[in-house]
Image (cartoon, rainbow, N blue to C red; front, side, top):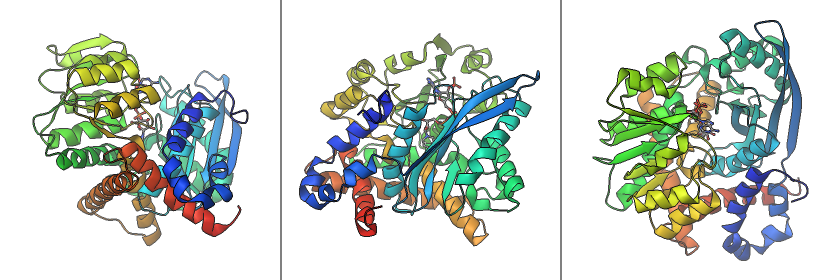
Amino acid sequence: IKRNANEPEYHQAVKEVLESLVAVLEKHPEYIELGIVERIVEPERQIIFRVPWVDDIGRVQVNRGFRVQFNSAIGPYKGGIRFHPSVYVGIIKFLGFEQIFKNSLTGLPIGGAKGGSDFDPKGKSDAEVMRFCQSFMTELYRYIGQDIDVPAGDIGVGGREVGFMFGQFKRIKNVYEAGVLTGKGLMYGGSLVRTQATGYGLVYFVDEMLKAKGMSFAGKAVLVSGSGNVSIYATEKVQELGGKVVAMSDSNGYIYDANGINLDTIKQIKEVERRRISEYIKVHPTAEYHTGCEGIWTIPCDIALPCATQNEINENDAKTLVQNGCKAVGEGANMPTTLEGTKVFLDSGILFGPAKAANAGGVATSALEMSQNSMRLSWTFEEVDAKLKTIMVNIYKNASIAAEEYGQKDNLVVGANIAGFVKVAEAMKAQGLV
Ligand code: NDP
């Protein structure tokens, strides 16, 4: 606790995992003797650096950059980069810690890491974002590589930012190392489906949860929080499967459209114009806009997909969702539900897909991008999408089996943590005290 003081998000992530591992540690006392738990909560390496850049009116700006390389037991470090003013070491550590287990769950050989900066891309020009990304990479390049650590996008980091960072890496190192970053543009080593992967993967996962109980997305009313990369492609897949997304949000407020959200309008506003979701009602005047993003959880729904950020569903929000008849929750964002909120969902018996399992499709497809880069060839959309779907179905199966094996049938929080942990613990055991 003292070593990680003032990092509540990191404490929350660790508490959730460790509480679900009690039965595993009883079954494997050697994990305790070998200090697996003490080692797994201490990052292998933490890098914090200055990022100076010049804005459009010539002023010097300084941000702080982070890369936390958490665990490399099963593969090179892998995890996204987040640009958001709320970023500090506790956020990066919670995300990096979760990433260890998520990456293990995908079944692919990738270790856990996360990075980012307190830089706020909102309202910045393309030129400012480029100068910032170049400065960020001018320090980060020392610590990454296709066999060392492979960053990707996250909040505030999409194709534009990955492109600027890749260009700077190539310029400094004088090497075309396509596999050093994932989420690249299709013309320079990116993979088809990577843009859609987290959102599509989330919906494939939730679909498996529903099918296991004889349900489906068809005709269901769905809430999707956020309106970024994960939210947009989760909405697209829900609509394809016959569900009706009735609300989306951003950090200022939410929109409610009883006719079902028009995704073309959302893509135009968010992906092309980079504007606020409140613009939606100018195009669709029968829809409603409400300020305050948390109000979205008061709308009655069958399925809720939190896809914005950490701790966006608290205990009261969870109670409201359950009371309003919500039957399933799938976490697209990382740790979007507080510990108290998660308890409400688990106690109520509704279907609950935790982030580590449900949103693993993004990093899984990043690993598929790395495979294609190594082979120097590209798979078709259909090939990558089929692999993504298989991975999500397997994650669901493995988490369900682990939950049942440890006497917690249908508790996918416990199941995902155990299934992700055991593989990493076994690899750490095999590799000795490192
Ligand atoms: P984007 O930056 O594309 O979108 C983020 C969305 O969430 C925006 O609508 C944003 O609104 C909203 N948001 C961000 N911060 C806050 C906040 N503090 N309060 C309320 N709303 C907020 O990010 P992504 O879609 O990529 O990521 C969303 C979540 O999914 C994150 O938790 C991320 O870690 C997780 N994730 C992403 C993956 C990926 O492949 N992209 C993979 C796995 C998980 P606004 O525009 O107002 O800021």
